[in-house]
Length: 150
Image (cartoon, rainbow, N blue to C red; front, side, top):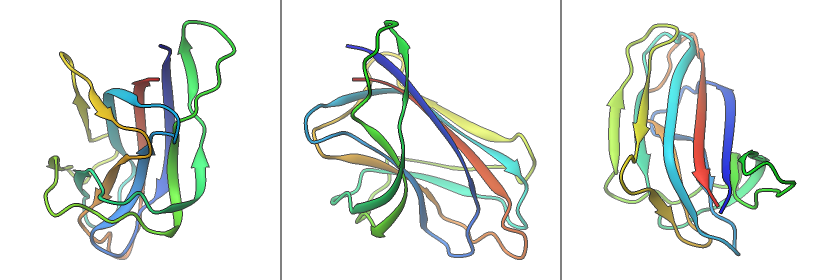
C-alpha cells in the first residue's frame, strides 16, 4: 500500500449545492482516505457551507488531478483521481456524511480526519465535496487536499 496526496484550488460558484470536487477510486483499486482539508483561498461574498457526500453514481469526469506519491518513495503512479469538472455530474446521496459552514475569511477552513479507521472507497466509487451556498457577487476561491492510501 502506498500513501498519496492531492491538492487543487478552484473558483467558487454561484449555484447552491454545487459539487466542487470528488475523490474517486479507480475501477481496479479501493482507497483508504485518512484526511481531507478545505480552506478559503480568496473570500467570496457568501461563506461556503461544505457537505461531504458519498454519491450513488460517480458521474463522468471531464477534468481530473493526479495525486502525488508520499511514501514509500517508489515510482508508483496513483490510479485514484480528484475530479474537478464533469460532463455528467455525480448523483448525490440524500444524506450527507459530514457538513461544516466555513467562516468567510481567507485561511478559514475545515480538516476532516479518520484517525482510527480510514474512510474506505470501494472500486469505482467516490466522495464528493459540495458547496451548499451560492457565492454571491464575488466567487472567491477554495483549496482542497486529500491524503489517502491505495
